[in-house]
Image 1 (cartoon, rainbow, N blue to C red):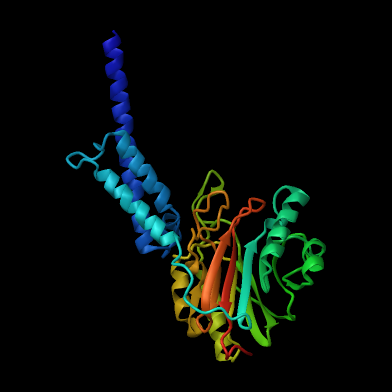
Image 2 (cartoon, one colour; image 1 turned 90 degrees about the vertical axis):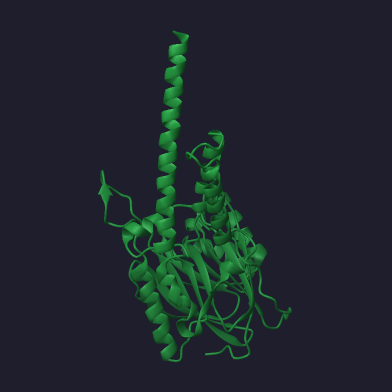
Length: 345
């Protein structure tokens, strides 16, 4: 009788591991399709969000649990596939480090972007932690998304840093604020689909910079609803297309955009970002000049890079520090670069 139960148990374990292997291979196939085809449709966009590194770790673990016999006739074959997934995931999400360049204080500039979750978690303690983080890094310009009310920003940032700020709207759930200790001026609101944006002028070290600050809506797509729950991410092509058109139009009008920054709520592999490399002379994705993991969400396990700073290619000596503070669910970015001699309005 004991032997019979043992055989039944072994059969169940074998069936379970076989099922897990099939499901794992299916997810690997879907992840590869997502990485190669990318977000040409809403449905394909969902596949882009299958994280390669965790999937690779799971694949290796599963195969080692089966002593390398997951794939018939190819021992440790699944392990090799998993290692390939892990390598791909790591390479694609770790920056290349700073670009070479000599230090020059007169031309050095730092720009911070951070989604601060309307003042962060934990009430006053959370916001105090966030504001301390910002003050400690002392950026020349800070682009903040999901900011708390103006009085709260003033209380924690204006007093110690002497900052002035431009807010998209003065409300309890303001989507955008640009802050600086340098002279700052609101220029215009920018109409984009699935998000909000504005341009701000900052005069830094006798140079004028035009910043396009963006906050993409985080609501899910209205397509594919199951049990009244939307399961597909919002398609970001319209948002990124509108941004690209505005940047191109501004450049034609002699008002080039120097920095594009914000919470785009889409990963950098989105097809809509491809044009940014050539748009208006081209932009660098600042996170690629970090030597750390580039994911910004969620802060406790940052699998996705959805917050971005794009710096025009006319600027030199790019370096980026990506940091974590668990008072908010997004990681922040501090970008350093050098102003070019021709930077002006």
